[in-house]
Image 1 (cartoon, rainbow, N blue to C red):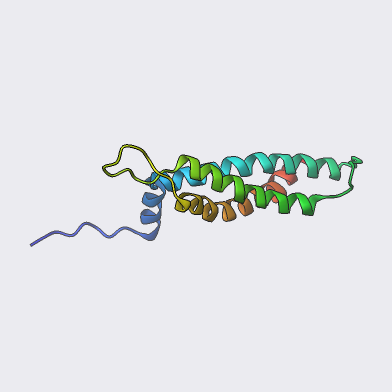
Image 2 (cartoon, rainbow, N blue to C red):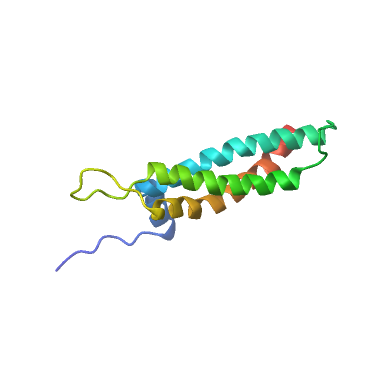
Length: 129
C-alpha cells in the first residue's frame, strides 16, 4: 500500500512553480524585464517632464513613445533571449541557438512590456508627480 503525499493547494503549487522556474524561462523574463525597466524609466522621465510643463521639441509624443517602447522590448528582448538561451547540448560540443530561443523571448516580452508600462504610468508616476 503506497501512501500518497498530501494534496497541495493551488497557491502552494504556483509558489513552487515560481521558485523552481526553468532556467531558460527565467533568463527570457529577466532579459525582457531589464529592457522594459530601462525604457520604462525613460518614459517616466519624459512623462513627468511634460506634466510639469516642459516645452520639448516635437510636442507631446507619449503615444509614439509607448508604441516604440513595446516594439523595442519585443525586438531587443527576443535578440537578447536568443543570445543567452541556447538549446540543450546533449552529446554535442557546442551550444546551438535556434529561432525557438528568440520566440521564447518574444512570448515573454509582450506581457512584461505591458506590465512595466502600467506600473510606470499608473503607480510610479502618481508617487513621483
